[in-house]
Structure formats: C-alpha cells, structure tokens
Image (cartoon, rainbow, N blue to C red):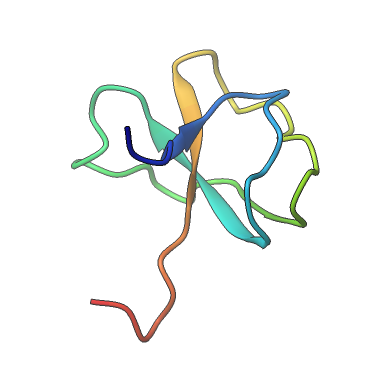
Length: 64
C-alpha cells in the first residue's frame, strides 16, 4: 500500500510542509484561493472551509 496523499481535519501531518485545501471530487478543477497551512510532522490538520474538502501536500516548485 502506498502513502496517503489526502488528509482530513484532525489527522496528523505525516511530514513537514505546506498543505493546501482541495475539493473532494473535483480536484482537477481546483479551488479559487485555497486555504494553505504550514505544518510540522505530527501537527494536526485544521478544519477545512467545508466538509467536502481535504488537505493535500503542496508540490514544491522544483517538482514536475
């Protein structure tokens, strides 16, 4: 099994980084001005803007 890529409020961050809010079913359409948080490993994810959204690690600028 692979590593989880989407997280819900209250989950613990698996790694340090900046996480962005994504839509649960329409992630390819994006969210205008998504909420962003910077967490350290073990920090809990905050609440999202609505119940249908989740958190995902933001890709680094040098990643394809």
